[in-house]
Image (cartoon, rainbow, N blue to C red):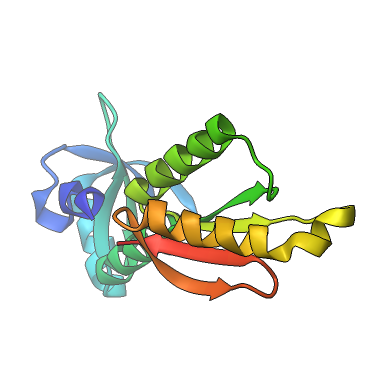
Length: 163
């Protein structure tokens, strides 16, 4: 978004010469800015500076509106939140538990969502109530940093999104 506003287009380009890349992606080499503008107008597109260098900027003939839209779209895709996953056992130690909760709160602060999964092994399946109590404790401890998106006590998974 900020990148698009810094780009010089058409008559904003003050440099006398530009390295020109035309609308068919052919490198035209060093061309006067006036000629490049005439070529861009004859095709019905804009002359846009894509790379500002010290002596001669690199300019490309393209549709500026379409170029801005694609840049914004790329920026939005790179800024999508990710899903972080935390796996626990029902008999997790207190320090380990608090460490995982603190890390999850940090992730939620950054805008990522967090998925807690409690794994049961062997005889731990006989004490599923401990695992569901742990899920309730997780929900209570993370309550202020995020809100519960889904709580599945059958598969022992809770998904938390930023509040």
